[in-house]
Image (cartoon, rainbow, N blue to C red; front, side, top):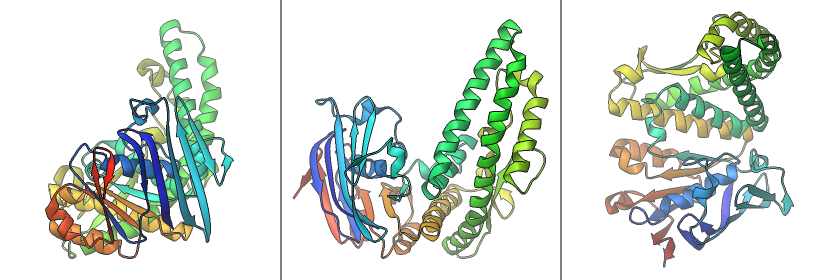
Amino acid sequence: MNIENHIIKNFRNIEHMEIEPVNGVNVIYGENGHGKTNIIESIWMFTGCNSFRTRKNSELINNNSEFSEISMDFFSYDREQTAKLIISGQKEAYLNGIKQISPRKFLGEFQAVVFSPSVLSVIKDGPAEKRKFLDIAISLVKPNYAVLLSKYNKAVFQRNALLRQINQTSRGEDLLFAFDEEIARYGGRIIDYRLKYIEDLKIFSSDIYREISNDREKMSVKYINTLKETANSVTAWSEILYNETVKNHKRDIMRISTNVGPHKDDLAIYLNDMDARSFGSQGQQRSCALSLKISEASILKKITGEQPIALLDDVMSELDSKRQKYLIKFFEGWQVFVTCCDRSHLRKIDSDKTFKIVDGKVKR
């Protein structure tokens, strides 16, 4: 997979930009605040996922415009493809000239993996960030997972609203059973998806961390489930989840919150069987996060058969020279976009094409 042409109009501080990247390493260079990350973000939007920086459409539109438009010519699945995204109050998505129901339809058509400073802190952050990592990674290889997750989150939101009503009025408890069924139906499938993905993640991340650390430590991952039982099928997980939500009615009403289910689960990261978040050094934590993200790229390639685009947004400054070299070496032969502002990092990268960005424009 590779991008052949990318046009950006009225996207954040970029009024108009057209770039024709090469299939190798593309370096986007310039001072902070001039638009480097905006280019990476505009490429990521075609994965079908939300921006990795904001969920507000208004923040993606140039101050002097009512909408932004980004388009791309790319090659994947042995054919030339085109994609366009128009962002105003909503998003309009077009794939190969045909309007799509939503940008989510890009899922499975265009694949990319983004590395950013915030991603490198995933080990230090709480369960919500680890669930977000899992959910995005799985959505890229299983597009229907994103729809499933949306329906599940909606059911949890509605159930919590009903819990608040019951807590305040003592009426409507019998309506909880309908939401229990919805949560169980969608939640059982989500748990099953996550557990299957983690089987691959365990293998890849362990091997990659071993290489990064020169075999000094062992990294392992484990899915922490709020359900106390185990199962080996979607039906079984759904049944267990339903029974738990019903059993917790009184507690949930008191707390005004749904307290079991995949929205409460976690991903534990261990180094030599010790919690990396609590006991790992900053360098070790970054190596763990790097291993997770490189594993995501590897799994994406394994499952789809396509080599995803690697988006490295200002991560070089966050890594020491050894980790920088490993990252660049791993992506040898991939189409890569690297942003940096430090000239010393620019010299360390064997780039095939360089774009200098000044005030939202390519400086030739």
